[in-house]
Each structure stands twice: as structure tokens, then as C-alpha cells.
Image (cartoon, rainbow, N blue to C red; front, side, top):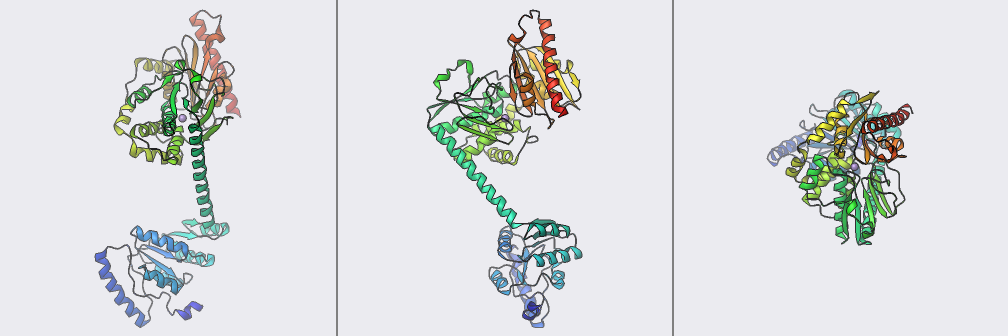
Length: 518
Ligand SMILES: [Mn+2]
């Protein structure tokens, strides 16, 4: 009760100036409030809070003060109540609308709860006072949104029980801010390390995954840019084909140079980097990691023993590379920004799947730098007749067991059309994982997709086909190639086809069935 002796009124106010109101009205209000205040002081009646105030801060210690400063900057109108008269005076000197009052007193809260009041922030360091103020506010005016400061995890629960709409727990915030800074430091350190490695070599070969997609190509382009920043020459090497219409448009419109692995002499390079794939032989033509010094990939591949690996749980490899460019302060030109943005968009299915805050942050940054016109052109390519035929075959020959679909499209040339067909049939209602396959003269090509979180399709594929060919990929998309040598002795194409169909289907179902039962 000591404060009652010092301050005969529950809320005791000096002339005030409100921040965050337009100057024209603030003048007249200033006058009104001053007149009102001096009357109230003379008559010894409590001052009413301005009825137009929609925000209030209770308790103006260090936390309350920081919030007040920020709110003022955002042009909000608000009042501050604190029981410390000195503090209130200081706030008033800085033109804040501050009032002396004890927030544990019913009468003070009653004064505060004007009809327009919408949000109250209870930020004092006194846990009991905060609890009391919260319960009175929620009792009188339950629809006011109340944010309360908790002093420990226990009181956090109690405050939530009392109806707090949000509880801030400073220790947790400090911990998460520290972790955020730590993450930033780690990411900076790895960027610097990568930079150092690139600096130490003259010629880098950047290997994208088989039948490369926009994410792997864009990531390679970015890595080449980082290499160029330390005068290291880099070439983007691919295996397979770039046959999907959008991907061809992507490479052509952005004028990206890639060399086929067959035209490359590996001894020319001091080091190889793998982007968007990370296991030798899985979705890349490598047989060993001998020359590989750098692996940068996202989700779900086993850690490999090479000089530098960065595998992050994000939606795309392009996101990781965007972070590097950021950390290393390397310019992202229009072409690179467009490539990276498209890579993120494709891998996250337009930010709808496998998307993390890091992907969104990277995309946001790239969006301002990218070329929308080119993006539009990439996205509306025409579909080739062969692709249409393969999708048609995939639908016609489908075999469904449970929610898993397998389909053989027969003999074909356009390997990438398989991926398009797999994407397409995955849209079928009730289907959660698919494998579409076909043959050319040398190999069986299989493209698989999963939207079932319990099925890691990359694992399924490598377990089903890894022993007879090369297989691998990510949890949602994977591929395999099996040399037809496995089927030597089968001369007749029709017999070969039905044999292949039987083997692939059985192996896939067996493997995915095992996964499903686990
Ligand atoms: Mn990717």
C-alpha cells in the first residue's frame, strides 16, 4: 500500500504529449489534455486514459521501454503505466504518454479498459503483478488481446491458463536469439571454408545429377560464380539428358553452358564438386568419390567423407547456394537470380512442398533480382509429342497396388519424359508413390516419386535396384538405371519387355511393401 501514500490517485498524470498522432490533431489534443490534467490535478481526481488509445504497455522496465520505442516508430498511439514515478517522468520527457499507476490495483485496470482498447502488453518484471493484472483484465474485458511477460517456464503455463493470448519468456527468447546468431556464425564459417578450398585450386568440375533439373543446374551455376570470385575456373558437367521441355528452356533462355560427361577428361580438373546429389553412382555417373572434394546437397543423403560437405535440411540446393552468395557478399546478377529462384520453385513445388523458412527467405531475396519475363517463358514451354505419348502409355499400362502405382511405358528415347510422366501420375487420387519405367537400347530407366512421408523413395529405389544398376535420389523423387546386360540372352524385344516389366515391378513392390509394413 506504500504507493497509495505517495500517490493519492491510482493514476496520476502530468501534461503529456502523445507520439504517433498526426501533428495537426496532436496540437489540439495537447491543449485539451493539458487543461484536463491541470484540472484533474487541482481537483485530485484520477485522470482518464485517452479514449482513443488502442494499445497499452503495463510496466516500463527495459523490455517495456524497448517495445514503446518501437511502437512509437511505427506510429502507434499507446499509453504506458508504471508505478515508478521517476521512470514515468523520464518517459514523459521523451514525449511518451506515461502514467503512474499500480497495475495490481483493480481501479487502475478499470481506468485502462476504455472501450477502444484492443491490445495490452504486460511487461513488468514483477511476476505476481503481471499475473494479477492479467486476471483482472481478462475478467473485465476478455476480448482484449493480452501479451504477458513470464519470468519462468512455470509461470508461463499459469499465465496461459489465465487466458493470456501470448506469453513471452525472455530467457527462451535470448536462447533462440543466441542460437540464431550461432547458426549465422556457422554458416559464415562454412562459406569461408568453401571459399578457401576453391581458392586453393585452379580448375573445378561441378557435377550435377543425372538428367539435371533446374535446382542442380542453378546450384552449379552459383558454385561456378563463387569459384570465379577467387579466379578459379569451373565447368558444369552433366550426365544423361536435358530433355524435359522446361529444363531445356531453362538452359537455353539463361544461356547456361554445360558439358556432357563423355566430352570431359577428368584429369583436367583439380577437384570435382557434387551439387544436388551426394552418393557416388546414385543419380550420377561416379564410381567413387576419389576426385570429389565438395558435396552440397539437401535432405536425406548419407554424410560422405570428402573434404567439404554441406547437407542441409532445406527444400532445395539452390537455397544453400543463395546463402553462400549472401555470406560471401558475391553479386547475384539477373541471370543467376532467375536460375536460383526457378530451382527453389521447382524443388518446393511452388513453395508448397518440402519448403522451409530458409527457402522462403532465399526466394524472397532472389525475387527482387530475377527476370520475370524469362521465368514466364521457361514455365510455358510446349510439350513434345513423345512426352505426351509416354504419359499416355504410363496411364494406360498402370498397375496399382494399395496406393502405389507402377507403370511400364515400353521402349522410348526421351528419358526425361519419364520424370514428367511420374510427376503426372502422382496426381492421381489415392496414389502416394509411383515408379514409371521404360527401356532404350542400353538401359532400363526408372523414375519414381513419393508424396507419402513414410516412404523415402530414394531409399526404396537404391534398395530395390542398387545391386543391379545405379539408383538413388531424395525422399520424394528418385531414379534408377539398370544396364540391359543383366538380361543378356533375351533376344526378342517382346520377351525382354515383359521380363523387364516383371522384374522391375516385383522388386519395387517388394521393397516399398517392406517399407510400408515397418
Ligand atoms: Mn534439389
